[in-house]
Image 1 (spheres, rainbow, N blue to C red):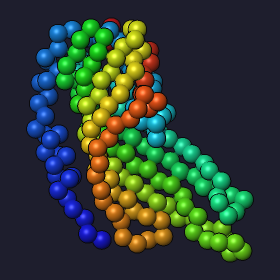
Image 2 (image 1 turned 120 degrees about the horizontal axis):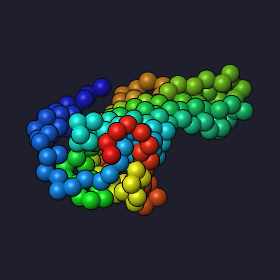
Image 3 (image 1 turned 135 degrees about the horizontal axis):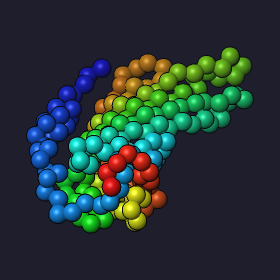
Length: 190
């Protein structure tokens, strides 16, 4: 399996060169607590966001769970995903954050590997993704925001049943039905 490290190195270089002082360029900032429930990705919607360093840098986390019927058996195929991200404030206005957000996603999905009448057998297909996004977080009211983002991602897929993995990259973006949200409800900050 041949792997190209260039996208990973480019991602790391962009992240390391990004000035952490950009958060100091704010004119004003939205009013909200430090911790909120919500999500950034529909693949891992059970999560939240925690702000620290005077709400200039945060941590996003998310978990996704799923179960679907197997095509050939009376069984279920399960899957799960975890997402981590580091939102960094680039610019703030009265009700808006513009964020640079590097992220990591790990996704595992069971795949049916047998045919009837053989016993039911599965294997996992896994995907690891590294992302770099620009996100707009808009506060509709104090402590409640909606957000949307676009950017680029590098994906490494390990197929079920062995075989060569595949690496790819693509731009990211979502329509209005994939808007994230956060409801901030405790942890100082106001």
